[in-house]
Picture 1: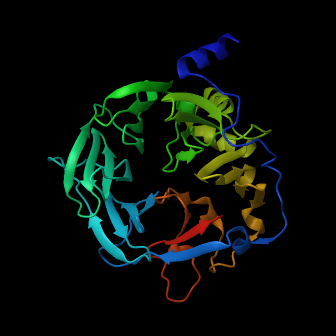
Picture 2: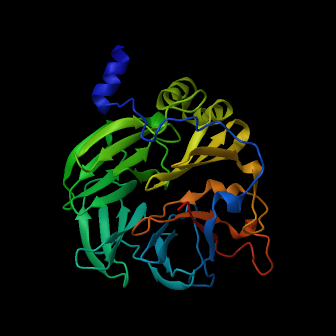
Length: 357
């Protein structure tokens, strides 16, 4: 009890109510199903490949704004139109004014003067550019190395750091008005899709667990909250922490993967959501949540009738995609998976854009 009280006091309130409605979301259907029946509204977007547009690096975050796709690639941002045609490359790496050492995260946000702004986080704050021209506009100075951030509204941006408290609520001048959640090395995995929005609240998932830091813009409050109602053998922060204490960082995740189902990705849109899971023995699962409830299917039971691919593993890579207004999700299909004449494995990945609506 003393340990529990200490954790709640130092890391804030803990709500027992799940962020998503409770339900039997891990009741798995092994019946064969076509991908087109899960996502009846879909389209494929090959991203143009040429010398200027070649996408490099790993974990390429993609954001859709105003019918354009913005892709992070080797410390640059590439922009493609709605059909995947390459438009421009924006790169400002360096140590001078208006430049950054490296891109740790990015977002495309509405400009108060109209149009859009490209926000890039680095070791010393946020650099802000014109999203259309790439011209430098201003900098939000912070004496912090930002791992990830999320623009919330014209008054608030959330940032994740490796400080004693990792979650910070900031105003538009870079002033931190609230710190939350003490650093927890057992649950410190940074993924490029850990922020998501549901029911007007912005959540940041702790590693691959069932718990998120939830920020409510209405009240300006933060708390810890289960994402879905915990079920047996689904990873929680406490389990992750126990394995970290027993086995250390290097063995922690390998051992957890042998015993627990991990919540790999979450994307929400309105009242709908998609979750992907990694179960023991690397079995991947897809859960679709809508007004009709939950449907969970193993990747192995899904027939990909949308495009011939060598594997369905691309369904594990659902990426940050929040249109204005939010209307679609994106999956990333590496060219090496695509079995279609004229597609080379060195080409840029394709996007599968889907909607449940």
